[in-house]
Length: 285
Image (tube, rainbow, N blue to C red; front, side):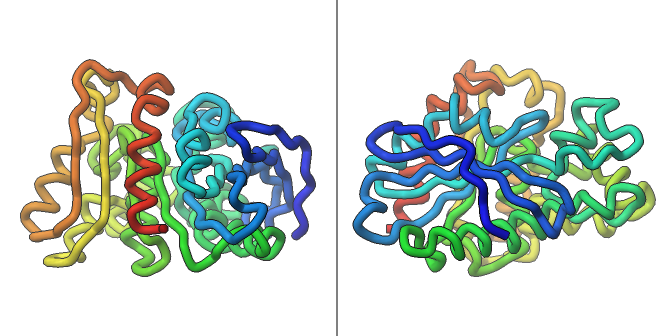
């Protein structure tokens, strides 16, 4: 489906495009932002997908995360999808901030009424990239894609990388929900989207469980967590569980950094955005 360009904004020598299209996966209109670095005018560039966290839209990170500042210098495009369908008008969709609208958790829902629209895994891994590369194929290299994200989006980046070997060159995450089947956010989301008694299905969307299947292999991952993050302190993120699973499975390449005093906000994201672009660039360029 062709994209409608709602705005074109000059920034760091490139252009941030605010786009919208009709999604066959979610059966709703979907907004998405795309940053094209200046070098994309003359050659195809690789793409870094950024998955946002709870309550966010494509605007949050593109306006406050400053990924495109480092991406401009590196010559990498950045794709910012939305976090859920919008306007599906499902019962209870906007009742809470951590489930429903703005909280799709990057899974394909199997439970009614969510299953009709909340197909975010298919949207992010298949429909959106196919549509973007079809429309911007003269500027974007479909063979070079990496993925990153924050919080719920960090969960999405890690799980989609682990579930789709070979699709992404690298993965990184800022304050990811690392073991969602063992934390309140994940239990609520997975119970609603996948079924409260379907814990085997939950495990298929949990980075800590999925990494066990990569025993002895490499996962080119960079993970940052702030020690001042209240959600980390409350046990919502559980990076230590992921670290333990990585160590026990003998998985190589995973670097977890604890950043003293940093919280969960875009001050944290923007501080370390350049590191995550550089991490992706090692594998994309």
